[in-house]
Length: 149
Image 1 (cartoon, rainbow, N blue to C red):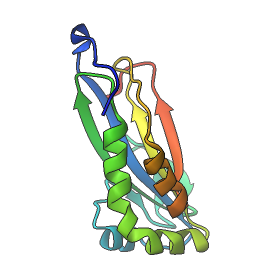
Image 2 (cartoon, helix red, strand yellow):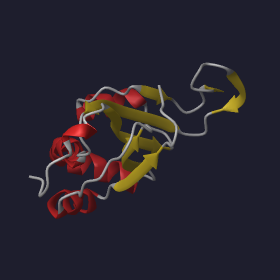
Image 3 (tube, rainbow, N blue to C red):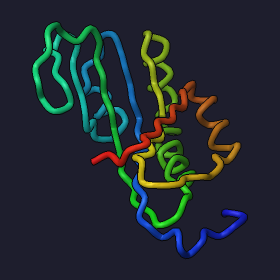
Image 4 (cartoon, helix red, strand yellow):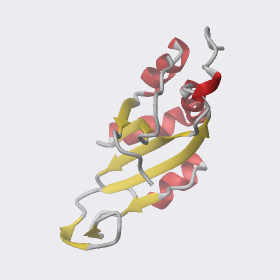
């Protein structure tokens, strides 16, 4: 699949996450989990109290629903596109549901999150990108310059 092989000296484990992130003004997170058959690893309902990722309470209530499915990968080379394609292909049968979320003011994004463990370089195949566009999904990339836990 890749045109060049990784340098054997670059076998230091590298971590990245591939995530599906959905924001919606009214939907319950359990409905997304049921419809997609994917676990929501981080969810909040409209009106839930706000808190930091470590659990510190903040003032105010969440104005919308947020649902995030995340899969962590640990690899010894730089290639990440196959993991993104795997998630996108899993979403294709749910195109109508994802479209209904969009049409009711939802936002949907596939996120690649590089966790600061070293070099990543790859290319997303055009058919994977076409599937994202066809389903109306955004693509987000997050890079951390310091390793994340």
